[in-house]
Image (tube, rainbow, N blue to C red; front, side, top):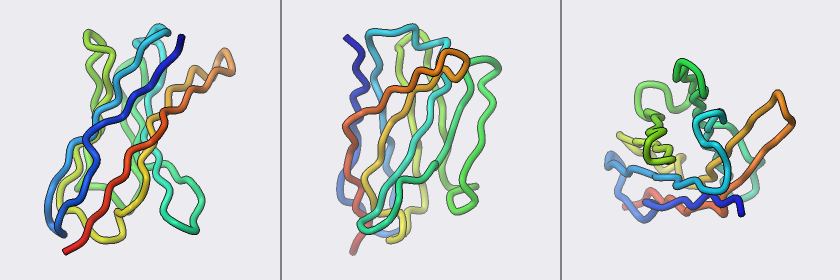
Length: 118
């Protein structure tokens, strides 16, 4: 059974930090590109950051460059999103995504709420 379980969300003040984790099971984690998406109220889900399976190449949405860092630990089947200098506009539900495009396979987690507010 495939599972992506996000954790680490919560309430944080502007300027603060959070680290999200995505624990994967039920598939060969190391062969999948891992991504974080977010969806704010009234907005579409959007890509935040991505890390490839081979080479660990990363890319980021412009709005989070220099503040967020995506990483992965293939030994632990876990992806991470380190979020620093958080802003109110980062408030959203954050979703973990696993994709193996060559086989047309995509998995989603259930999401974790991040709220940035004073």
